[in-house]
Length: 275
Image (tube, rainbow, N blue to C red; front, side, top):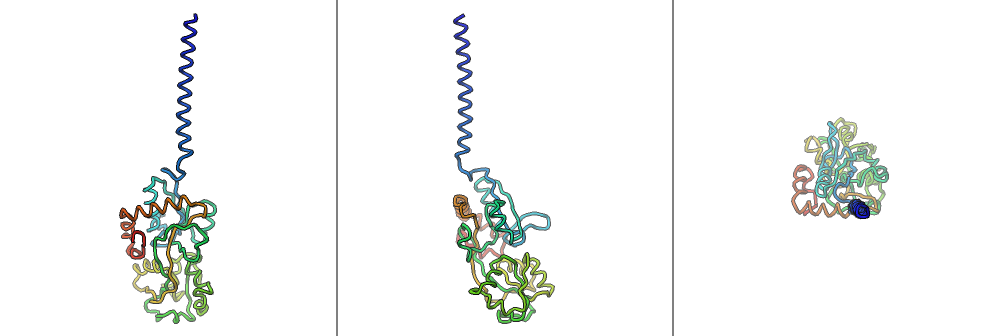
């Protein structure tokens, strides 16, 4: 009887030990996941971008996302093994989307200059200038020729800010017959072609994309201003910003940036990563 009891006790002890070891092993894996890199493999990276800012970001007529910035964000996700999620929006909603946590960043031809203290910025990745685009036969050749003319601009853009800044180009804007504000540059350019406005104040990179499709459009030689594009993060997302910066360096070094930029010849010369 004692022998049987001893065997039973040993059997129960072995079962208990196996359960305990299994529990410890499971707990260890779970703990590793909990204490691991928040931005490790499988992280869902949500890119916030302007749904109509070609060639950096856009949603086409078929609902597909595209553009240099979109492809770069997808390349960063592939580099880290992250899951990519697109968060397209109207540009004037960008801050609301970022602050609500709908996206991780604003990555869409986003101007650093003048906003240095408003966001945590990635390294600059593209140069840009502000231009005036007109019809080639408009008779407008200089900024002075815009006096009394109707000029369009997209809301919440650096061009808009520049034309409303007393230390920027507001003195010039005050000579316009009107400054018409649009939700997107696509609508503004449509109105320019229709004769509803005389000119569009626009980033040269966006203008290049439009002029590549329509040779009746030209830019004045004079610039309104110059700037650099970066990725805007929430100010406390330091670790995420650093990881994206590290990926940008790696993607520049292995030729991925150049490969993606070559798909968008209208802006290729402005991309500064790896140069």
